[in-house]
Image (cartoon, rainbow, N blue to C red; front, side):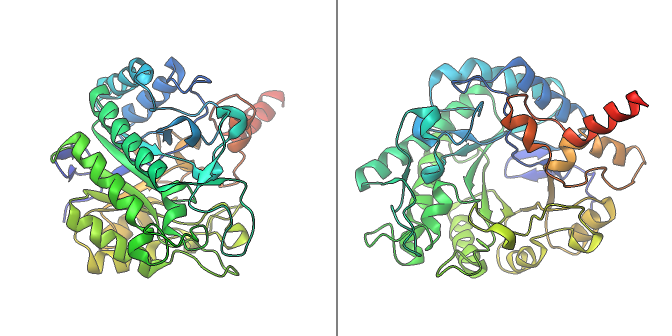
Length: 376
């Protein structure tokens, strides 16, 4: 059986190994969403350090779908020069790059966009007012079109694949979840109706990029909304992913949780013990038993031996990282070169602080440790 460091395919895309950089908000774009030399340099650094596939931070497909400051945009043709430069930078480093397409839905930032957030329902299953406007069916069609147009831009800009963000309580995830989606029309109620937006987005994206261009999805294994009246759960994920596989989807990245998951979300603050690695390994195992397309596993993986074990046991086909690559962009190259010590990432989540402060993505703990050492 080929190992994680051997070449592999996702659809028609050949990758140099089975390691993936999971989409991570970098906070390095301009205020209007354009990529920057600094962001492109980060992508190039990741590619140069032997990652098989680099997935961008979530790129918003329409203005009201922007979630955060300095977030990458792919909502307008004006974004193309920066996106082209990003794809070229990754390719110069010998890597492959995938653009994650996203819409924040009710988590849209009105202060940034000047537009009212929109979602499947104004109130959730607990009756809480989510402070958004319920989307009309005609508006849903416009969002579907926006995803297709964004995918076409990504392909035009030279990206090697696109990934649909259907996880973490963003718009597609909101429609999938009966906690956020309380509609009584063709987009609400049954799982078939709640997944209608996702299937329409996938169809629009596939039509925009053609049959041979890889289309991936990031989706929740489970919303982990313990204590809530309703949630998107493991069996829902398996049913939806089976439908997507039959429609021609190329790969799934399995994640979990939403902004409402709180302490029940598997991604805890604090050091990840070895037994905690692979948050979604159990639903991943169920996925591989039922669905015959590549699965990318993300979530708390910090040691090469664990990653190799998950792959060898048939739990996944690719291994994905976010925070470890903030701490060590060269982690995969280090492992490949023979230093297989555990990732230095402590999972303390201090990396959010520089982004929120407008400084862009970096490991805050590493900088604090370096500054302390320099002061000794």
